[in-house]
Length: 137
Image 1 (tube, rainbow, N blue to C red):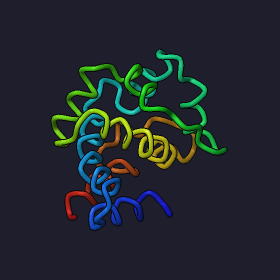
Image 2: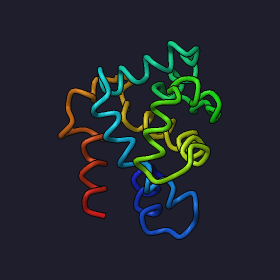
Image 3: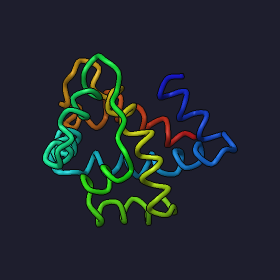
């Protein structure tokens, strides 16, 4: 199932993971769009935390490497995770679990040509399209 299918399913689904994704995705999209340097800046934060190989797999054409909630906590930091939790109405463990599932696919879909330059085009590309789709759900 593709990312857009997952989002649409999550928005209308009854399972906990789907509703968690639906609640977290708009907050995550806003965070990425407003993060200094956009998607590239956020991915650099992951690289700085020692997750360069994992991030490279998300951007590249091969399979996406998994990331653990603990790795996400370290890379994003307590403040960012807390902000995501507060704004999505979820606890931090739920946010980290959902991000571990959602983020590799989101980055993979947002970087189809192995480039992270989409942060400068908030009204176009996949990130802008997802934001528009979520606004209609």
